[in-house]
Length: 71
Image 1 (cartoon, one colour):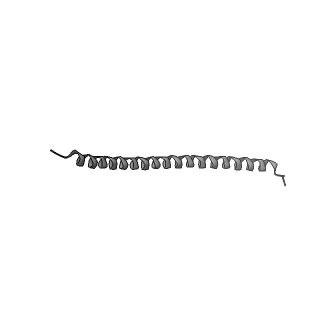
Image 2 (cartoon, rainbow, N blue to C red):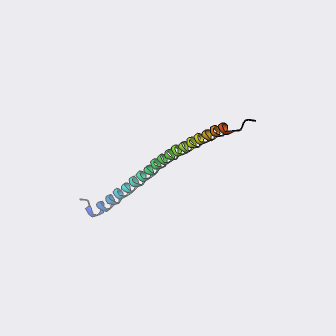
Image 3 (spheres, one colour):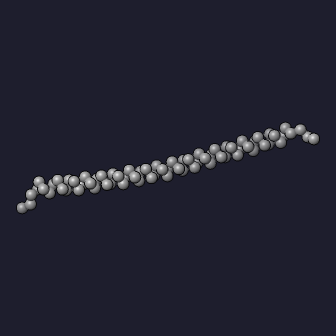
């Protein structure tokens, strides 16, 4: 017969080790997903800000052209 007291701790340690590895992998994947999402959000914000800046510059140029004194 085998001694259950010797088998259980090893099995429990192995299971805990597997759980720890799985949790670490899960956290790493979540961080990567958040990083990708964050970069996408940042890209979208930068594009939006650039669009607003281009629109403002266009309006400012148009207003300046309309208010220029003819020579």
